[in-house]
Length: 85
Length: 419
Image (cartoon, rainbow over all chains, first blue to last red; front, side):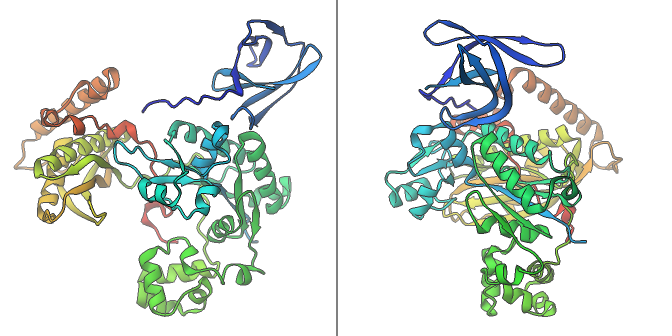
């Protein structure tokens, strides 16, 4: 069976640097946006399973503070994505 | 004490998931359709905009397009639907371990024992709906009742994203005015029989005498009567309880109509190989072989026959299937789809009566050969080894029924037992 991929301009897959803790916890440290700039994640405020209607998908949603702004980072099936603002 | 049973139904499941993943089609009429090239060209699911144009599930795609020229048809993505189905089950599992799936998009939950922890059935139903919306981005309708049948009816009453409660106090007002066809297991032909004796609504079934219904419909008559009165007491299966497999089968709509016995022989071999491989996967042998034929005008019939020995050998199953076919099909029309099923299963390890007249060593060799084929195929791919008979037709030989289809609906009545 062929895998179907979805093209969605509002779903932006990003490169994420993360730490896997021995207890199983996964914490993203920084992300690299599509323009190539790297942003540090200052704090993870909340982690829960949630859907993104805007980007179209569902996964673990990390509410992150990046440069004093709150933003969502989703971990879905082994890939990280963000919603386009 | 009355049980508290929920039936959760993910609304327009395939279409909703597709609309979530394709925001650009959310405001358009959308249908999920089978592969047109391979002729599985029917509507599998649709969203509400498509439903409003009168499109029905099961309709062929060109008919649907005629009703609604703007219809957007997307191909099915089963792995994604499976993932979604599991996500829903994970949510249910936070409330109970008694979860009985009914297809990918529906499930019964028995939350009787969880109510002291989580609140009333209605409360749990609302919470589950909220979580499905927030965590999965799709909606569900939930029916709450004191038996499985009414819970299922309830989930069908209000859509999308709604909870419907059917109690011993209100069922006569809520359930009885509904048409008989809404009741689980009242299909087209039962409905016709019921209508012919003036039974139109579920209330009519409930008020008829069980003896009369038995006379008209056989054993099902009484079962339907008890359904209509809310006497259904079948339990909700526990999560993780392996469902008892009654039969293993595969069917296929072929890329082109089958015109000759050679075509049929080829397909029967393909299907039998897959059935035999799946029997071996599960450690079974079958004692009967069923075939199922649909001709190009969608007329359907089935027939079955007994094997001399329980078997998981593809050639024995295929030869039996072919013999049944030859005895039953008159070739008035070309064939569109065909199915083979092994039933009456026994575990492969169980003792068998050795035949005096067959060469048992040959059968054992044959079995070993097929096990070897299984391992070759799992290492090098399904098409790495083929029967020579399949080399005659490129269209037909590309079929791999074992891996192409992963969805097998689960029967309501386990082990053929009536409630």
